[in-house]
Length: 300
Image 1 (cartoon, rainbow, N blue to C red):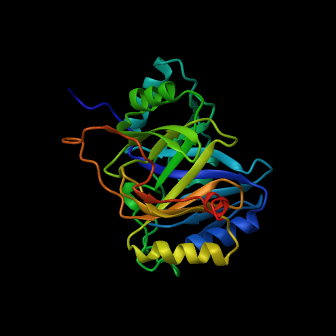
Image 2 (tube, helix red, strand yellow; image 1 turned 60 degrees about the vertical axis):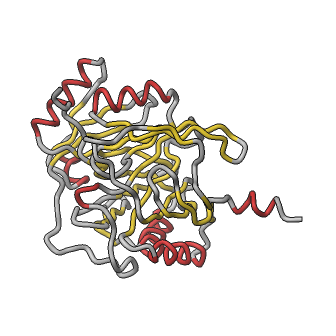
């Protein structure tokens, strides 16, 4: 059976934030990103690899995800995916030339996913000839052809969302985690678009559209150094160092200036579609990833 046309990678994330300056300090001084551009309306974008920009923060009160941009190979794939969406009754609109310029891409289209999350498909990202060199993450990030990293969305209906992304956009199921996590029941679907174990995960409904986004360093020690920077920068640590059983990521979690989480990791596994068999895991972590608040409550 011929493989359906599909998304290629997580291309960019847009956030509406109440404190752009705090986000710039966070992105540059904790994550190790570089400012890519400043806009007349106060927005700032950041880069972490060969793409001109990967993250765009825009001033506003939401402190939440504004949109997710999924990259496709070319115009033919874009047209095919748009046809899939429209055949399923999804309203798709063309992005304007101004939209494409702001996102540094050749062309984009817009729609909303089943949970109402603004979503964009695009091709032709602007690239930078000079390699990205972070002054803090000296060995760089696992990005470029693997995409920005991954994003975990809070969705209304897990089954409906999984069908949407897999049947209309070509994502493939990597695995699921079904487990009790510190007092609440979690059922999370992990989807891949390229060899990265997951570029997208779908979890339960939450106060915000996004649970977290993840950046992956090329060297393990960069994780510890990033956690040190987060703590010294006054960010709230949400989960201690740990390793996940499904993607094998060694990571920690902390709060962004907008109140949702980020994950900084190393060592994520690859998926080979020729041999991969999805499975269900019944723990979110093999070890670690303890919430400091839970640990503090357990002290005698």
